[in-house]
Amino acid sequence: MPGTEKSCPCGSGKPYLNCCSRKVCSLDQVRWRHAGQDLRRRLGDFADQPSFAWEAARAQDLYLGCMDQQLVDRYDDFTMERCFEWFIFDYKMSSGKTVIETFRQENLKDLGEKGAEMAKLWANFPISLYEVTMALPGEGLLIKELLGRGRIRVHDVNAAYEIDAGSILLMRVLKVGEEYEFSTSGLALPGDCKDALLNYLYQDRQDYFDKRGTQARGWKSYLKERAHKINAYVLELCTSGSSGSQQDKDRPGKGGLERMAIFAVENWQDALEKINRSGDFTLIRKLNDSSGGFRQAAAALLGQPCGNKLLRMVIGHLILTPSLWS
Image (cartoon, rainbow, N blue to C red):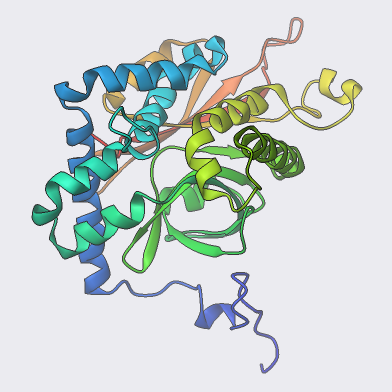
């Protein structure tokens, strides 16, 4: 019936069915995806060279040094995956350049048109905060920038089923042809964290520019240089909670934030065995692709037993996905 079509949440003003509903992926976009996967692999291999060992060790010290060490122990695989990604995109080596900038300079002739274009774009994409507007089943997420005005459609089939509308994401989003993809594992927080996060970022950005004696303009340079500090703050917020009265926080299941972490794993069989042996987790689901290869697993993080009751509250979720950089 005329007039019953809802406008698309992306803000285009078009009906959803004519905008962000499921569409056929073009052959050219498939080529872009393959080029993006190849670029990720080559970047990972390049960054893992012995010649970068000293720089990588220094980057790791900086990244982990600003974090609560209990969080480092608890989220080890997850943390190291994100640390490696930060080393590639944001860490400035003694040359004054990042790994991805160095990679592009040394390999420009061998990257091909698509690879060269993506490498140039990716080098300038910082981590940022996004709010999930809509999950697009079978496709990905529709997200909007909290530090800008853009709305982005992200291709990530798994995220569409695991992340709810209203969630706040700390991610790096990369352009791949006409689509966008998440760079690596990320942090997803409940929507009620938004104000606390924005307050922190605005104040920290002001302090950042004040120390340099310059007027605060834009976000990119701040986000690139402070990415590891922002990550540490958000991880702490994930585990400590940000809103609600003290009475609510002390009450089981109220006030505090549910923890959620997305781990990129290389040896998934070993990871699942550890989960099965752990008394703090229970495996909920394991998914394989059509060829039988590991695609995703989800486990529940259990709270402490209450008295003599056998039931334990679920206080968070762990999602395991194959490593993007392996």
